[in-house]
Length: 252
Image 1 (cartoon, rainbow, N blue to C red):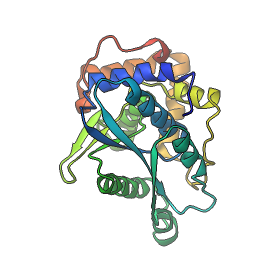
Image 2 (image 1 turned 90 degrees about the vertical axis):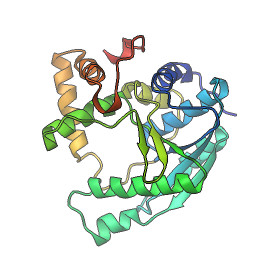
Image 3 (image 1 turned 90 degrees about the horizontal axis):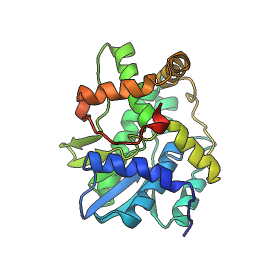
């Protein structure tokens, strides 16, 4: 099985988040949503690494939605799953066709995300998993808060752990404490192949706009992202809560 020299640093963030929010219990079957981006590929490796030493035993499966997108290639995902010995479930969908060809959405991200969530949840249930691990990280949390504030005039974020009673599944976000730059560094240093981006909306989204704004503010106010994240914890927003002792060095 393939080993990763850079994984230990990733695991320090992952285990802290898993412990702080009790994301995993003995006997869990967890589906990992793997789109092929750097974040989900990092999550895949982190969950496999965690599985090897975590005191609570759990099973994992990787699920990828085949969007039927022109030019897309999910072969690198299957290759990584094979290298680290994780079952890879590929679910064919017509999401791309519906969003771009049939509906011809001018703002496609919302509908696409909604359809992908539903398909992933259904695939997890079909695979016998009642938990779904998602690759949202530290930067995603800060960006989501700012997007909700700027675009919708509300203060909110995704939750570290979310129970969906309609489908009886739980969503967990083990990379919650991990800065995006460390995921990018892990992928680069370990030479993990990432599928080419072929989505027409890539790089032209509200999230990308907010990401660039935060990056600009961070240049003049170092540590801004860490303070925003800390504010969510102290306010116990969306299921966040204060967790002393988590790694902070790379957040500031």
